[in-house]
Image 1 (tube, one colour):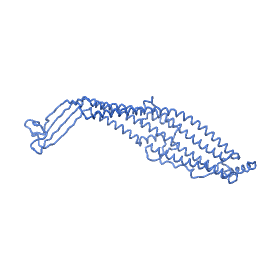
Image 2 (spheres, one colour):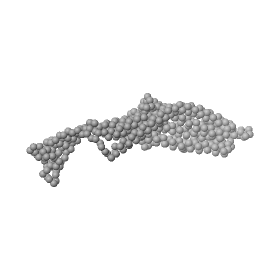
Image 3 (cartoon, helix red, strand yellow):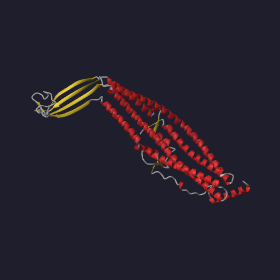
Image 4 (cartoon, helix red, strand yellow):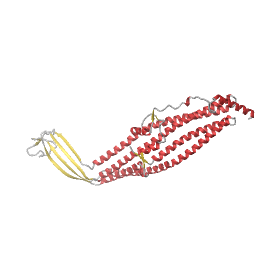
Length: 454
């Protein structure tokens, strides 16, 4: 390019800058575009961590299901306990012999007593009390139900922890998506400003058609990033609504203090002394114990049982209202002989269940160990990524400034201008995401080794 052509280009660029605005920053002409309008706010917003946690506790179906599991396990324990407690029953009956109306059906001769006869129809009252004395199978069943109840309680605690972790992750993702949407609009605005400047320069003869096409391509890329970012924002809002227990989108209020989120979670959850105390491992061990006792309960079915039974019989008589005819007490020894293989099949089935529970416990232990190690490591990684992202953003910003100045004086090309702008846009967005990832890493590191109650 000759000195004369360079001078013409510089003059044209100067005219463009002056015509853009006498008080505006260089390369910042006023542009208008419908896509620069922000995404409409969500119908409902969360203003604080306490509000979000209260909504989860009130509306979460996962939490309701876990609480119902505890209630169900408690009911099974009460059923198992009933086999060891006294069983009292009373039965009243009215009977009439249709073939022999003068007889009282079901009444032994002499039961009415001397000088009395049973009424017709006969009204009888039978009270029976039974008590198990020796029943090893029932005791094993009670132990299995107790372990299952402990496992259900631990599962409820694990659900609470995972709900808190999931809620925190969704809140961070929503705030990050909100910020990313804003950055995408800033990027589109810058791309439109470059496009307007390049178009003016082309109209004044300081550029060529290739310059215009390049910056228009950059505008198209910025629009695509904005559309994708807006959709991601809508999806995160929907995910937040589901995490809170609603079927509608939820946003995060601008006043929400994301930096204090880690401290907020520490008030609702407590750190564990060791990994074995984590709720999912406690629940898995309880399930193994419950399965083991259940197998022992089935095996104890081969053993005899011993109990006592007492029966009191009363009936209506003539004359008089009635009398208690008999009261018997008996000792009952039951010895199982043959059940067609039912007991053997039950033992084998519960042995398989016990092995499955042991395998599940080992899987849970492995996954928890890897999850904790990964969460601890992610904090260091997130801090390092934020540091590199800051450096990258600063360098991209400096490069963009130098490229703009070079373009102003006619020493830079439109390709360099577009590339520096795209690099700056990407670096700024990357820094925003890295900062949110750092917050998320600290949350994960704490909540993977915590117990959440309430």
